Amino acid sequence: MTTELICLLILALWSIPLNHIPAIARIVYSDLNWGMGNRETMPDVPPWVGRADRAQRNHHDNLAMIATVILIAQVTGQTDEVTAIASITLVSFRLLHSLSYIFGIIGVRTIAYFGALVALLVIVWQLFN
Image (cartoon, rainbow, N blue to C red):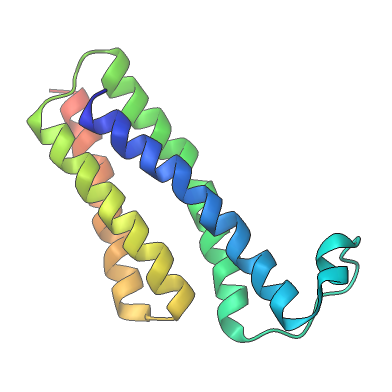
């Protein structure tokens, strides 16, 4: 498996904790009945839980685009050392983005977002070279 595909797999698997962190937090701040019920009301939770929801949504919103770019590079045989480094950079920044979003570290989150975007654009650039 190529570096690019390993990075894509890591991003896909990162969805698992991002999917569960907000729900588990809501169960902790309420009770198991809320978690097993219809969730018609939301428990009162600290602000980081809302940020975890938004980090999850942001991750899912970007994952399809990232997967598309990496898979196109893979299928067309346009992967190389540059796309491998860009993919590693992309994963690192996306993980940092999610964590800094959850912990509310605004400056780091912004840098991580733009760093991941630049890494993605590097892969796109390689597709046209």
